[in-house]
Image 1 (cartoon, rainbow, N blue to C red):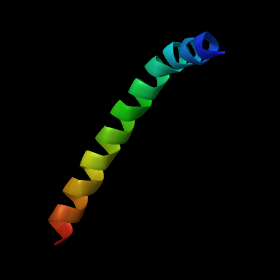
Image 2: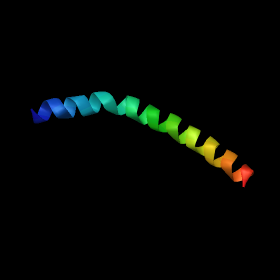
Image 3: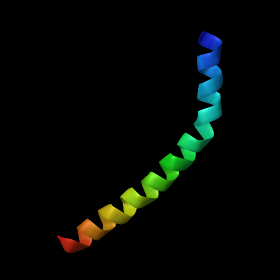
Length: 38
């Protein structure tokens, strides 16, 4: 059971990292926009 969980984690990690990068970029854009507004 523990190994299956690990396999799933390893399998999902790359997509999570990519989602993180995309979210981080969007966050930077949002922060920059709100910074310009104020």
